[in-house]
Image 1 (tube, rainbow, N blue to C red):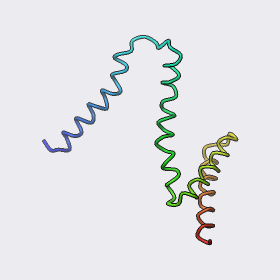
Image 2: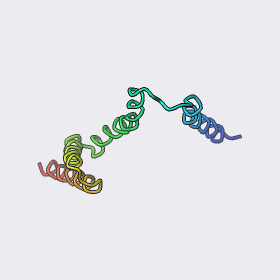
Image 3: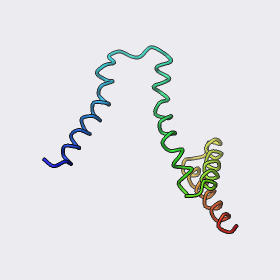
Length: 103
């Protein structure tokens, strides 16, 4: 059996265990408000922690990454669609990169 298949079986088992174990351990609804809110916000916090550094460093220039993040944040805060947020954040980063290249 090659190493690939061994790694695949171990990874599949550990992934399944992590996802199935909470269902096996928790039989009833969770009544505690703190635990419910904690579990509700965990996916958002993890997603933000994974994407925030990537957004800033994605352009190769921290300044243009921050400008893109700020422009996208303003559009998102105003309730614009995801497409508009992405387009204007990209445009903000692009314009900043062009200004930096000219300077």
